[in-house]
Amino acid sequence: MNVMDSVDLRSDTVTWPTPAMRAAMASAEVGDDVWGDDPTVKRLERMAAERAGMEAALFVPSGTMGNLIAALVHCNRGDEIILGDKCHTYIWEAGGASTLGSIAMHPVPNLPDGTLPLSAIEAAIRPDNPHFPRTRAIFLENTQNSCGGVAIPPVYFAQVREMADRHGLAVHLDGARIFNAAVALGCPITEFTRYVDSVMFCLSKGLCAPVGSMLCGTEEFIYHARRWRKALGGGMRQVGVIAAAGIVALEEMVDRLAEDHRHARILAETLAGLPGVIIDLDTVQTNIVYFQLSESVPLEPQELVSRLESEYRVRIGWMKEREFRLVTHYWITPEKVEQAVRAFRAVLGQV
Ligand SMILES: Cc1ncc(COP(=O)(O)O)c(C=O)c1O
Image 1 (tube, rainbow, N blue to C red):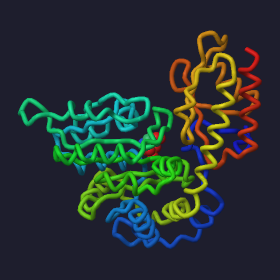
Image 2 (cartoon, rainbow, N blue to C red; image 1 turned 90 degrees about the horizontal axis):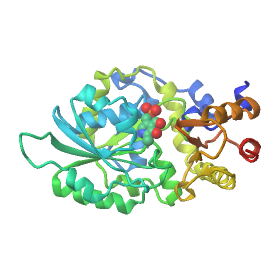
Image 3 (cartoon, rainbow, N blue to C red; image 1 turned 180 degrees about the horizontal axis):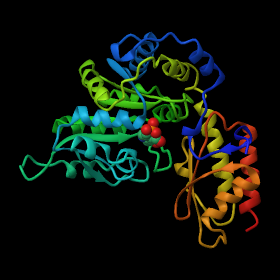
């Protein structure tokens, strides 16, 4: 299959760099970034800190490493993080905070709107007692991927901040898709970041950079984060070649995310009109669409995935059992949305 012809809706991590990114990468000024000599990385880090309204930022190879470093800086061995049972750090990051940092993870249930009930967070905070790990931090995620890419409004962050302050806890935001949340809610990302101590956001998802995420916080936080990045093997040398794409991502790719959100809505509404498709349209707020096939549909999940791909060149994510995910992004053009709509109607419309 020619990848350019396919409609790859499995994730926004599949995005290729844009032509402007490739040009910027080819001409990037570089130096040894572990020695602090790479001017392009420095520029990207200044831009990221400014966008987040924070003192400093660090370029890291992945969102997973950014979240892990945040845990390692906020916590010591034997400390505990409170986080959502559907959040990426808890489910999809190989338990890194526990395996590498001896940090316990205390999950509380995510509500369908992506938040953690304030009462559940408060109940999860440990009293000072030698039997318990020490609660040190609360991890939030926005948009909340597994809850359908929902955008959590700033007021919730203000409430969590207030509680964290009462208990002396740090708040970290996994903002892999924080720009999607900001675009969906029509506010700058500082409306969220002003309430947290650290934020990680990804350049390599809807913003299309090939690699990389930014971790932002105070100068002191980033000082310690830099040391942990080195310890984890994430110190990169002439990495301005990659950072150059990140600069284009921040300059050119944020405002257009609204188009991805419109496309996700078209796909969701199409699916909602097909027999046997279970979908909650209220959760379709950004670029992610989850849906399920009811048992009445005489198609095995694998069959749906393979028929869409082999007959219509449409690739979708199979999450579990009869649940699937679509993620729109820059390379899902209006023509490709049409192609996907036709494919869903053909495969599911007549079963
Ligand atoms: C919400 C969220 N956080 C963190 C990550 C991790 O990012 P990376 O794949 O760059 O490690 C992802 C990746 O999909 C994600 O969806």
